[in-house]
Image (cartoon, rainbow, N blue to C red; front, side, top):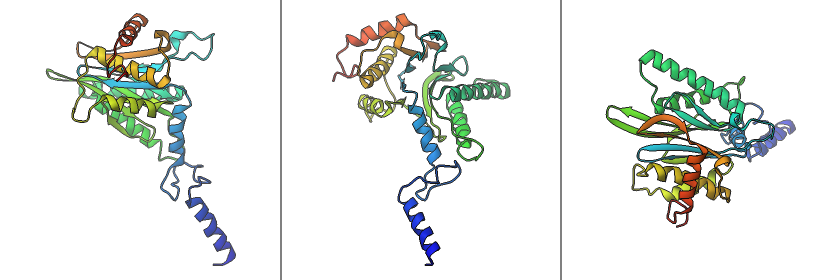
Length: 273
């Protein structure tokens, strides 16, 4: 090798050994290890909110739950939320950068409205999750865009004739989506997933939890990973049920009742096994 060539080879070798130098400046450039660093940074941005969100699917219901933090005493607490409805019966919890979340919600509402206009019926939850993932993936392949720093957990009930099937999906900044029995997102995501994995036995293809068990499992999960007793004002929860398809928010009194029932339990769901 000539000296410049050898120096270049040495620099390339150094970068290939795990350094992100140079390869994290553009979203469209792969590193020698095949990584897109800007997409990885988007996953880290989700955790900067300091919030943890949980979604659980039961036999006839789904629940999404997240922490409620009001960062300024002058804020109107009722205006601070991470829960958004997309249609009357489909909603989601966003975890991450709030402006990104609002922009994404606005686009998904347009997608859902366009679907109903084109086909004459409400958009299925699975198709909405696919559209959300497709849109997120586009942001990973254009140099004039950046990935959205959000993870969304979508819930709804798919009605197929007489069948009503609870649905729970999670979409991430890379454009990956999949259906879940239970999942989480945010700063304590790994701990929450570990807790949930112990409550769902592999042989069972679908959850058999009742509505109350579903809500209380989500509460127990969040309580366990935060290491403190929850208060109704510290959390927000939304549910969909077979007997009430609307994406509806649980009131403080309903949350307090569920927390009281959870405190009186001494079983696997309560996390005291």
